[in-house]
Length: 335
Image (cartoon, rainbow, N blue to C red):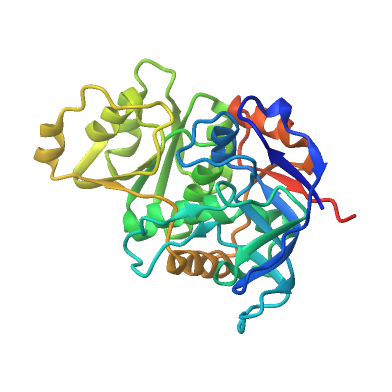
């Protein structure tokens, strides 16, 4: 089969399409013939050797949609047809927290940047019928992360004011759509005015450019304070989320692209009785509920661009530069 195999860390430009052996299913596995896959920042981190628990060589890619074409000998119940893959492996039996064996498809386990992928049977679900292959492939990791952070952990309520800092990436665009669908008042930040305007097209009420010196004052005046912030940035701007929070507000963190938070004044959180909550990916229950939510509200993932599998390096470079608004998707060759 054709696949993109990472053999050593470095830059995206080294990634090439190559022929490797098609996987064979274990007793409880299925083989999915992929139609489309999508990129996540995690893929870029693995290429650069910045992700914990890596194993090389490996096929990258966490997101994918396709058709089940082969099943293992002990598989009894599997949806045969158009499927979408939950990239979270070995979550465990407790829906409230992941197990110590939890990992994400695409390293160390071979992923979806290939014509076929082997995955445990419990990780395949029926593809939402209103989504195209490309839209379905864009949904799993980012949609699951957004759902758990906003709904399972953040417990967003209708009418609340929600802040999504750094809008543009896949998770952030889902957060805007999900929160708006639930009746929240969504505000965003970005360094680019055009991204703020795009976010308004998909449910945001407004936003501010965080490159302005007085951006936090503008945002406070615009919102009147925040009930729930969903943050993936960390760094210097995190303290601003604390200052913008109302009494009893929540901050859910699912990443820190700008690194550690300096000089966080904890008494500010104490006085406001704020909650700081960590969130990562999601349980199988979260994934099933997320798919139901997407179908119920007829949500379509926002796609930045669709590329061929061999154009993966181009997509990773665009993601690295922060140029995308929404997901970058790969079509998988069928011959």
